[in-house]
Length: 180
Image (cartoon, rainbow, N blue to C red):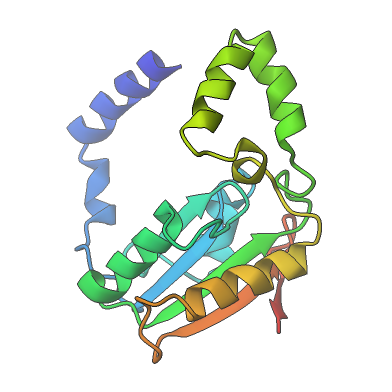
């Protein structure tokens, strides 16, 4: 698949198809969106929010979560605020998310089947990584959004004038529901 993508890319560049996407690094709407990496949202999310290329910083991960105060999601948001002029943040989870009810136990069996040994997992644990917490999903999507919004709002490096709001987007229709 990667070879096919590389071949497509050569044609994309040669035909100058990139020209319609040219913008700078600063988001025109001074907005950052933290959302899930789910493939259903690749085009639906920006379309449903009325965003075009260059409008917002879109940060994606499994579940659209901030799982700790110093993970890559919060780091990206901090950079977006201080370096890129973002002054509003939307946390956008979605319906029927695969991270809902995700657990380390599921991954554990999959890892063993793919050749990762329990010895390797024990070594990771000895380094201070709690794999159960790190690979844990969530049980309640609205509560997960509330927790993520609160983590961002109360982060010691997040300015208090940044607006942070949480939503759930319907994975089929794109309808947004705000979570208070």
